[in-house]
Image 1: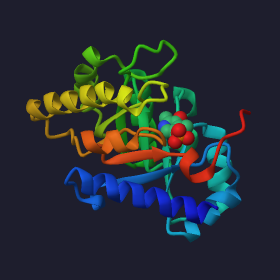
Image 2: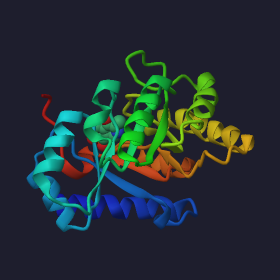
Image 3: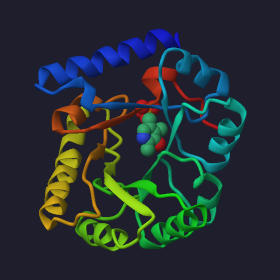
Length: 230
Ligand SMILES: *Cc1c(COP(=O)(O)O)cnc(C)c1O
């Protein structure tokens, strides 16, 4: 099932790109494996999937330790508490969810100790939903500026989560807002900041995200199936 789902998702990504004149090679598919066991991840790896997204530090660590797949790139996409950074700082490929300076400082501290630069995205809160993480749009440029002064934390772009809605069109304003922030940041010409990546689009709205310029899509359900609430 996973092999088939992966093939479908890859085809749909390719089709979305072709429909809007983009090169499919520009898109990184992050398979969101939260709540699914390591065996399912191993199956996806055997289908050539190497980027995986997890939301919980403990779960990520257990999978990282159990899987023995050094080729896998682990993305942290969930809410990250500063006191948990130390558990993933040594191996995480990209942290998508930096939304406050305290967290960035903790990543810096761990990066210094490990002598490792850690790539991050700044997560922007683009919806009305109160429970969502992310820095507010009007504070995003300031946060990026601040984080850019930390030499072990490399800002590679922005991330957002669209609204919880059946209709993917409802996500378009969120994605556009992130693109406009990206342009604003690029205009500052800060050479310590790269706006290489826009992480946006999930199972239900990745087509719209690709139309709007996503370079990373984070897809769980369409690959692994429905999650059982823990
Ligand atoms: C769970 C999750 C996803 C994947 O969502 P699906 O709808 O299952 O594709 C993507 N991004 C984040 C931040 C998530 O928490």
